[in-house]
Image (cartoon, rainbow, N blue to C red; front, side, top):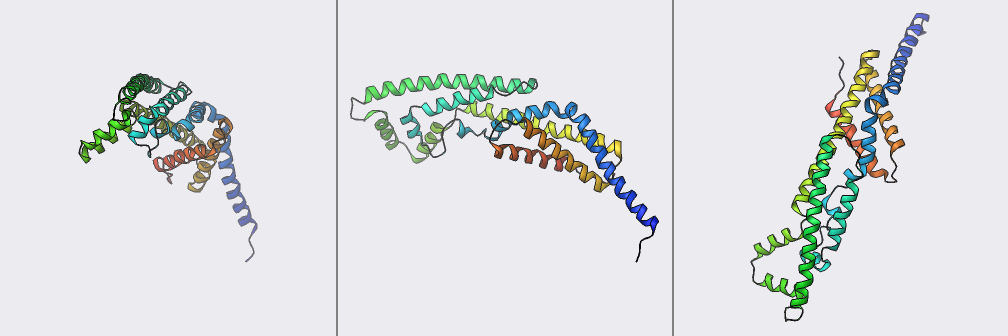
Length: 256
């Protein structure tokens, strides 16, 4: 069946209208994005790597290390890990009071933990010197002797406590990561503000909303890529995915 001229005109108008709505939304994003999400993008790109790898074992000892391994190492790896953690949190940019306080608290706990490690290192040296002249075979021999006199439950508890990252450092690190994730959710909130502004401006259909949202995500992704200065694209892409997943879950598209 041949289409009439009026049918063709109507179809053309509908397609043009759809295209114009999406295009108008894209133009709105270009005009408003720097103002609405600019600071959040900068903060995101500056903290992606830290947040992605903020696992205690990356700054302490791998899980396969035993307490005896740590003593044999004289806490050197752990000390270096805490030093590196301290250096990395100093690269996190100023954002707000909550972030600053979380960083300051972690700095304080790292400093205290490093002082304690220095004391332990000194004690290990002294004990090795003392017991090395005896039949215990130094600190390792004393550890073996202590194990022989303790129950299995006591040994497991001592092992767990002995090899763990300093508790207060671990808690402060977890708090900082929670705070940073909260700021990532702020980016999602700002994206919604930007998206909602476009919807109010162009009054799109549901299908148009889906296209507009997709374009907004691509805009955010491109801005992150432009400002991200690390070669580690795995952490970058994974963190972007997490933000978009949260965004879609928290702000579902509707027909209204």
